[in-house]
Amino acid sequence: MIVSFENRLLQFIGIMAIFMAIIVVLFPFFWIFLESVKPPSLGGRPDIWRFELSWENWSEVLLNSSVPLNIMNSFFIAFITVVISLICGAPAAYAFSRFRGFQGARYSILAAEMMPPAILILPLFLILYKLELIDSRIGVVTAHLTFVIPVITWFLIGFFDEVPKDLEDQAMIDGYTRFQAFYKVILPVVRPGLGAAAVFGFVLSWNDLFYSLLLTGAGSRTLPVAIASFWTFRGIELGKMAVAILIAVIPVLILSYFIQKHLIKGIGGSGVKY
Amino acid sequence: MGQVTFKNVSKSFGSTNIIDGMNLEVHNSEFLVLLGPSGCGKSTTLRLLAGLETVSSGTISINGRDVTELEPRERDIAMVFQNYALYPTMTVAQNLGFGLKAKQIPPKLIKEKVNEIAYLLGLTHLLNRKPNALSGGQQQRVAIGRAIVRKPKVFLFDEPLSNLDANLRLEMRAEIMKLHREIGATTIFVTHDQEEAMAMADRIVIMDNGSIEQIGTPTEIYFQPKTFMVAGFIGNPSMNFIKGKISNKMEISMPIGRIKINALLNLGEDIEVGIRPEKIKLADSKSKSTEIKVTVLVTYVELLGPRAVVKMKHESGQELTSVIEHDEIESYKVGTEINISLASQALHFFPKN
Ligand SMILES: Nc1ncnc2c1ncn2[C@@H]1O[C@H](COP(=O)(O)OP(=O)(O)O)[C@@H](O)[C@H]1O
Ligand SMILES: [Mg+2]
Image 1: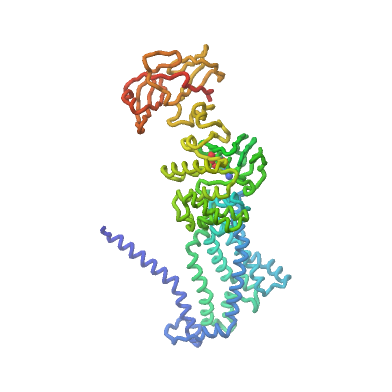
Image 2: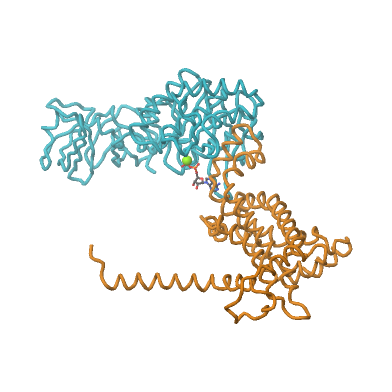
């Protein structure tokens, strides 16, 4: 087969475009990494490209700052949020998938999702204040549940839609209740979806700045808040900030890699199919 | 074992009536086939009996016990779905044992029973596989094994053979009948394939539009169809229909001629006269008052192995189809006129609809 000149040209342009896209995406990470290994004396000078490698920012952040505690907080909050969201979201998604009374019902989940968080913050703040849960990790979990449960529910509906109804019918005939059929037969089938939903919810909670900023104090501060707090009245501590950003981003990148296959289905797959 | 009674059962989804006042008595150990065009409510009937749908009105009982309000798990039935519905995350052995596990049977006994069934169905070497590593026929066997291992009162099959290729379908058909003879459990088998129904059934229930048209043995259904729908639905090629009028003195006039009948018909003036393709014969020289001799033009001959289908046209425009033996084919040349005979005892009469 002779490949025409036009085809080759198109192929070349395509590869160049992908290459450009990769550079555009990866360059900021590279640049942040450079910033993190600059000597602190050069901090706040992103225009300097030649310098001596220094790990001082890293040791400073990891050993002499609150960042390790912040990581623990973020991890704890994201983990508990995801566990609760799965426990509530999976049965909800199953119900939305199987009992289709009012067609628009499933879209009301999205409506909850689209509300600006600013609407909820005041009542949440007051409730948590009364319960003396301001500056507690459980308080932040409560706030995060308001957007992670809907997302996980929405995410899972598409997965349940793809499981044939015959499976739970068969299980009910085989001697089980509907709830047993749900958790013994249906849940194992959607396990990849549960995993992807968990990762997705984890990342949402892990990345949240808004609620954490307003609801946490020193004890329960999360990583994104800590990153923001490197911007002090003395100026931006760019080197340390860069370290914290990398620590925050790397788990997200790794986790996203593992669920990329399911991500599209989860986000787009809940459209009603008939 | 299991006797099933539907009493005045109706089912509607929203405002559409899917099953309409069904009355049905399934005998103990019987192999009953529900046959009808797709969408007529066969699956719904099975699902009502299984408890997967709730009746809108009427009662269903199994062995005299009213099960209308019971959950599927309380009815002691087993069902094989068209797509087999094997549990994809479980091995064959786990699939087979899942129903026994629900009954709190000790694991050791479950294992014994599973092995026994696997041996019976030739699945022993597949016990540790997942369903997606099985062929269609093997999946089918697992689904059947999962049903019989529980020794239920009633077996329900919803078009279980329609996803198999032709050879395998015949093989599984024979196997299901053999199992039924050995186990002797009441079986309700749904199909839209009349040949399958004829071959397997003790009795056939013909359904159309959510109600029962006729219940009978395959022979009764074929030779004494009670309604126009049954007559037209059963038989391949299907029955010929000719519009007729009852004139006085027990005589029917049709576009192709008149015929005397020796029975009083109470069907109104306009009727449909039916005759099976294989009952259309070449006319001989003798003439009888109980037959019509008709001259028709042969328009098409299709050879199907030992038999052939012949299409013919009468000068009135009436078309007829007949089935002939291979050795008669010389007499049916396309484009020639032939004389055929319709005997009155081969005719079926239905009210015009
Ligand atoms: N859950 C349901 N909701 C609404 N209509 C249904 C439902 N299930 C079946 N039907 C309708 O009932 C009719 C009979 O269906 P079914 O019993 O599956 O027919 P069959 O098995 O004979 O092909 C069909 O017209 C179908 O569209
Ligand atoms: Mg059906």
